[in-house]
Length: 346
Image 1 (cartoon, helix red, strand yellow):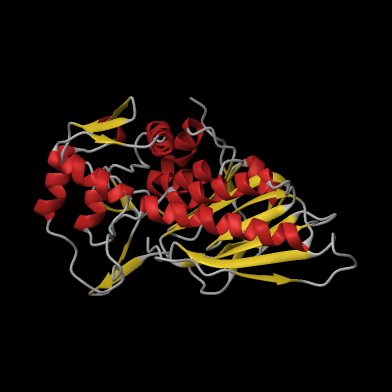
Image 2 (image 1 turned 90 degrees about the horizontal axis):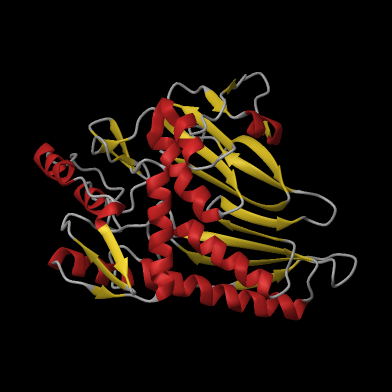
């Protein structure tokens, strides 16, 4: 994940019948991508102050969770590597504990303690996309032998310790969702009840767009610039998609995606795209990553994570989804019949 050191924000106003009916849009940049905010049914003054609140919210998250530039997260990882305790703020502890919950529920297929594995693969730098050989097997084997998980993180009275020096925290499969949840909370505090926050195609929507639901496009994992499907969401729902097309490098004709399977130390291969709908953006974000790693066993992991709405694209192009997801999704190619799979509840 590439986080920018500063945020740039613009606010534009779309015409409508009245000031209150205007659909207002804010755009800014963080996490290496454009973030779009659409507000419905607010006046210009509220829209402007809301944009400023969101800028501060995303800026704080940038400063806290950057994986390799100086941040709260890098200081935590330095302390873990040195075998030393570190004082953390209560809000930082809350985020780490939330991530640990999702890790446990996913059977550690979502593993924020695997930052060193991503470092071994070169995904901790700004030039992660450059062609290079895969890492030496010995380095991967050393990481697998240490088997770092969030169970190795201990927090008591806002002091964090770890007894596994191979632990390195990274929230690439979680930070976007955390940021979106924080932004939605900021909107609700402002009295904004109809809005959508879209961060690089992942989003959380509250309320409606006037008398219509929000219509969300889901990217096709193999057709550049094409949509695989659309979903209509309203009330309060997050739609997060994880895919092997987001970050990868190619070496000698082999594609190496950035979603790593902590059981093998290598990129996940069976599933190439996973879309999850959930009220919490953070849970949807973490779960989408876990669904990619889970492969054919994704219904079992989805049940453990408490999910209902999941859509998977397998490596052979076959689309699989849950019965409830089928009711919400409209595939772009209606001739392509999905396989319906029930969630396996624990």
